[in-house]
Amino acid sequence: MSIFDTDQKLPELELSPLQKERLEYRPSICDSLQNLEGIDFQENGLPLTDAAIVPSFTQLSYRKTVIFAKSEKQCAPLKVGVVLSGGQAAGGHNVISGLYDALIELNPDSTLIGFLNGPGGIIRNKTLEITKELLANFRNQGGFDLIGSGRTKVETPEQFKAAHHAVNENELDGLIIVGGDDSNTNAAFLAEYFYSLGCKTCVVGVPKTIDGDLQNEAIELPFGFDTACKTYSEIIGNIARDCISAKKYYYFIKLMGRSASHITLECALQSQPNLALIGEEIEAKKMKLSDVVQQLADLVKDRSKLGFDYGVVLVPEGIVEFMPDIRALILELNKMLARGSADAVMLERTFNALDKINYVISKLSAETRDSYKLLPQDIQLQLLIDRDPHGNVQVSRIDSERLLMQLTRELLTRTDPSIKFSCQPIFCGYEGRSSLPSNFDANYCYNLGRLAALLVARKRSGFMVSFGKLAKPVDSWEPRVTPLVAMLTVEERDGKAKVVIKKALVDLKGKAFADFAQKRTTWRLKDQYCQRGPIQFFGPSELTDTVPLSLVLNRG
Ligand code: FBP
Image 1 (tube, helix red, strand yellow):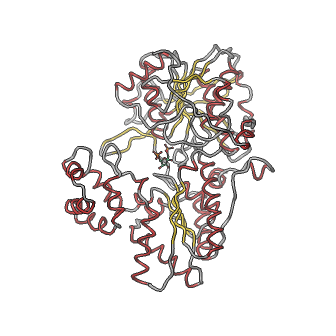
Image 2 (tube, rainbow, N blue to C red):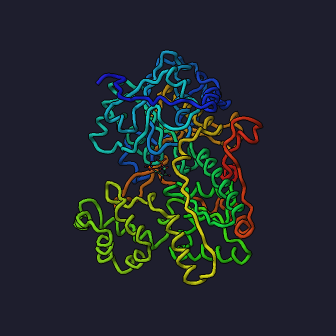
Image 3 (cartoon, helix red, strand yellow):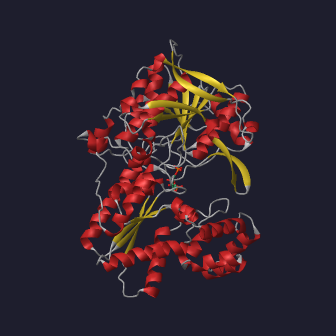
């Protein structure tokens, strides 16, 4: 297969006046990365000590990198490949722009190629050459459509071989992997594999996910989180204004964030709803589904006493997995209906929905059977049908906002039938992933791309790029380069020990949660909704250059 063998058909989208205006935006570059030629990295060699990780990484030493040694080095032309992995996040096109501009700055004969439609594009060696002309229509734009994305993982020995073949065939000096915790775990393994084969391709990770759950000492925030939260908070603010005008509905708003409630916490701080459920708190307090429903019914009753038969409730997408009873049910269902199991086959052959449900009830243990029976029928069915290729329940597809609405209504009808409870479900999801990136994400991503290019130029492999002091103006952001292996740990997944980058959950001891916990008592009964309005690109910097409130509170 030849280099730049592509079947990618770029959509011919018509750009709106705002999109055209955004093409002209010049992202700010932090002071430390102004002059790329003058920068090199110094390393402190520290041995990898984690006994569980060592056997998988004999090549990558656990290096602490001290960035900013002076350099006089001339850079030869570089060939670099980039891949976008997982769900969209605003700013992906700016990672590519920052990468491209930096490569050309380092040597005008450098080339950048994109692997198409996610890591699957590496395995199949499907590429697109990224040129100045091509990029011209994608700068500061939302989405990932220039090269696409995908959720295929590079995991099997055959896939590793295919990846090696692709980088060799394309003679790549570097492979930039833009993704979340899983994709960057993959990046560490690929870097190790390429090293062991003496392959020159450096692997560099870039932290992406709107969910905000790729955070640690080195990574203050993955990109895309800011834009998604601003987009959702705009919607929540508008809905709250409608709510307080019509005074007749409870709006149950589900927000994306499969495994952590960072988005819900940030949106709560920005929009000040009557109630925001935080999964991590529910888990810490061991609240069952019935406890959460009771909490909701109490809210409705208390507000009703004040004459408020309306309200705004935020629900994180992954909420049910934080409830011990529902988590136990999901785990049991995952085991029972694992792909190819006798029960899974039996269920496939059963066409009637009620028969499916009854079959599962007959198979569940006594404890989980009761939890399952508590659920409304559509959710019972959803748990059986919406399963991923391994047979696992797709938690993000569960209509948790409808589930909570329905159970709250049932409880109120039983206990306080006179209370008025009309509600509307709303899902804030995909629209937050591909919005025009905020200035914060546009700048952040451009700088991430720039730093990734520099790592390849200095032949450093197996690192993640990030920035410190993100709550400060761009000039003072601090570039960080962290060994991917330093982020790895061993966790049990599907009953097996697996090397992974740990997902960061909401820190209940953190300042952002504390601030929220202190204010929420007032928000519960007094309506203090805040309408932040749309993301601003023009005007005073107080409007255009805001950063996530949780970032300011936790890291500011
Ligand atoms: P990533 O972790 O890959 O960035 O994706 C996050 C996310 O946006 C979740 O919040 C959501 O549950 C999921 O993607 C939806 O994925 P899909 O595009 O496969 O429906």
